[in-house]
Length: 287
Image 1 (spheres, helix red, strand yellow):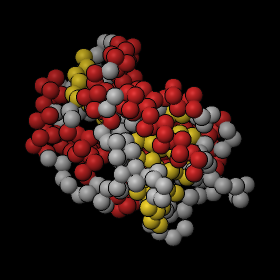
Image 2: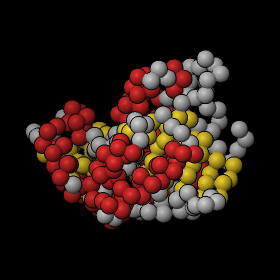
Image 3: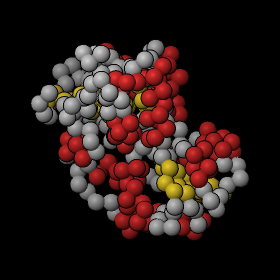
């Protein structure tokens, strides 16, 4: 068994937000190889039509699967997950896991039944979110904030730009006014801002995101495929570079390698301008 290749998961996002999910998967399943695919040339998705998002996602993921055959695909982007999952599942037999705002687990934790939902403007407006709230948090008061700056602030962290705390604190004022005790991080970028968010909302008791649920779902799929022992690293390990390839459709963000390394996701290979005819590939460390 020790000679078996480790199973592989392809994690997709429009930017660096999916790294929060990839880090959670790696903590639970240290034997998994990770391919990280970011459509940062198309970032942000929130201002694009559904047709454009679907086309970009499917094209990039199909190409990635050709070069890096994977056992599971994780669409670690809330905006993309709302529209692209049926198209991906029709395109490939590889299991696809999407991201849903963690309304249900948040409703199970709130004490005062007052919740805050922090998401992108596009996600906040989608009817499926109304259905989630009605189904799982019907007895709660749910305050929503769809702020356009948060995703960009999370992206800028990679380059060492500090979060503009005064702006963040002002953006969170509706949550303070509503006295929420639980906040749903309804975008995969937002866990990267968690420390700043906690400072701006010191009275919030529970912060809930989708990373743990996604990791559990990937583990379940690995178990169904008879690969759970390998995925947990019981028979093999991915070494010092759990991310075997980090693929960016645009230029890789400055500082991305140390940022990923700080999350426990040191990449072995970095490719920019992907999937161009001759993408730039840079080895970031020894095998």
